[in-house]
Amino acid sequence: MYSAPFEYVCATSLAEALRLVNERREDTKLLAGGQSLIPLLKLRLAAPGLVLDIGRLAELKGIRETAEGIEIGALVRHAEIENSELLARACPLLPETAAEVGDLQVRNRGTFGGSLAHADPAGDFPAAALALDAKLIASSVAGHRSIAAQDFFVDLMTTALQANEILTAILVPKLGPRTGSAYVKMRQQASGFAIVGVASVLTFDSRGKIEKARVAITGVGPAPYRASAAEGRLRGVNPEDRAMEHAAAAAADGVDVSGDMHASAEYRRELAAIFTRRSLEAAAARARKAP
Ligand SMILES: Cc1cc2nc3c(=O)[nH]c(=O)nc-3n(C[C@H](O)[C@H](O)[C@H](O)COP(=O)(O)OP(=O)(O)OC[C@H]3O[C@@H](n4cnc5c(N)ncnc54)[C@H](O)[C@@H]3O)c2cc1C
Image 1 (cartoon, rainbow, N blue to C red):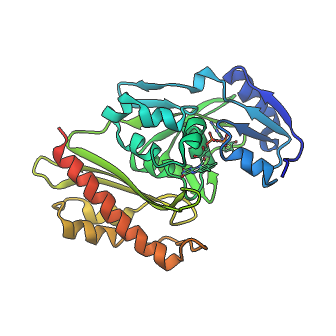
Image 2 (image 1 turned 90 degrees about the vertical axis):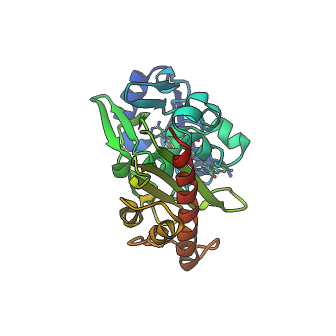
Image 3 (image 1 turned 60 degrees about the vertical axis):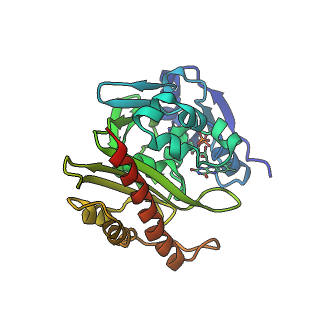
């Protein structure tokens, strides 16, 4: 199927892109890696008047270490994250998650910012961004604002971004000592998208108890979410199997669990618990070995 006709502009600077998106707002779709937008256009699920290509904006590229953590440009591709030595050392959850996204072609074109802005309810990176407590930088002609990942994913494919904003960068805070992380996923066989995906980050205190726990789940509800009931069961406890299982049992508490042709709601709820336990066990094993 062919898309509806649209005007195409390839932005040459962030300032130009922000000006155009401010003028055209809801009439505009940004094109980053095109891995989600192009299918939407071809299926005519989106029919914008303007497709604004931001794919060449140097301001949105690169991965940098800062005093507070790591800054990742919105246009950094999944494959760059997967293969980044800096991230492998400082934030291994992101390369581990990137390796789970689609196939090689998708990872070579798709962007980190595009995945977060698109907010597919089964997308992998939203779970990682939530578990890492990332901050998302939204830019407009009025300036920049920082949005906590927890406030960014609002509903089904709906984020806190305004129509005149572009996601320009993602800030990942430094992980402390005695911290381990893991992303585990059950793939839908045809597309590779998550039926359930669980990202967790655990920090132990000096006595080996869990000091901080962040668990984020994708694929289960209309939007990715922090499993706060599970997190609450982990704080201050010894990270043994029973504790992980007890916490994982609360993985979908309070969530309107989705059911579809790939997995019923009941099955997904069960998978959420199983994959949360696996994610927590892997994160705990890594935290035990971390400096
Ligand atoms: C066959 C296939 C398999 C896939 N499997 C998976 C998978 O297993 N897991 C997974 O998570 N994803 C999967 N994807 C989706 C893929 O990860 C996409 O790359 C991603 O969802 C969107 O990134 P993009 O750069 O391609 O964005 P685009 O397609 O260019 O844009 C997507 C949407 O985000 C908006 N947007 C893009 N960049 C910005 C920005 N900087 N600021 C504001 N809005 C922006 C666009 O306007 C558009 O609405 C798959 C895709 C395909 C085609």
